[in-house]
Image (cartoon, rainbow, N blue to C red; front, side):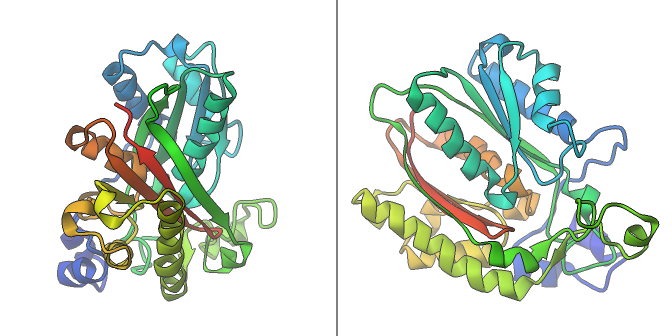
Length: 310
């Protein structure tokens, strides 16, 4: 769905959207019979094939999403069933746009205990299902998508080295979905009031993210004695091009070190980081230093240092 598609029914333009966000197009799952599970399963099948892994080898599946297939059971359970992960237990993690970062850290801890050998982590979103297409402040920003990764034990010093993760519930007022939870369950009134769509105070979020994301990156870089020249890529959650470039500027990273694909996908929330990692993986060699960073509703944010392990 291109910016021109939005301009056909909203008071906006390709020039304005591109200048303010960096987005040119985003993907929308239009089939009404398909949702989060469909996207997650397809991403998972790709990573299983890429790593020559059988579904029954997976012993834990973690799925992170802000748009679950159903309120319950967990979307992860349905995805594990569809894939045939018969030896895995599974659960969902909800941390909005930081969900994949939180999930990677959670999975890494299970690996470190020695109790798990192959963990699949999936970020999957059908954001179009909670967008108000009369609200030009929000509907232009998001797209649908999914990405997946498999974590395994490392014996060569590569992999997830360090992470700094944070949360601040004060931010709930600036980015949230008013209705659909136990406080405001679905009623005729909540539907009429458009309470089941994303609500966002963009300027308030922007002020927090440009500071907090950079601080988290600085924290993990300082703890691991990393200089800006040591970083092969910074992989940031793709929410807004201006946010990503501001973070890169503060860290003194070049354009070549800053990965951007927001122009093609928009903000895919929890799917954003794994999609980026899938795209940059052919450009990385074993031992390359990658900084992953995100900021999301909640507020949730953080950064992770990965020494590329494949």
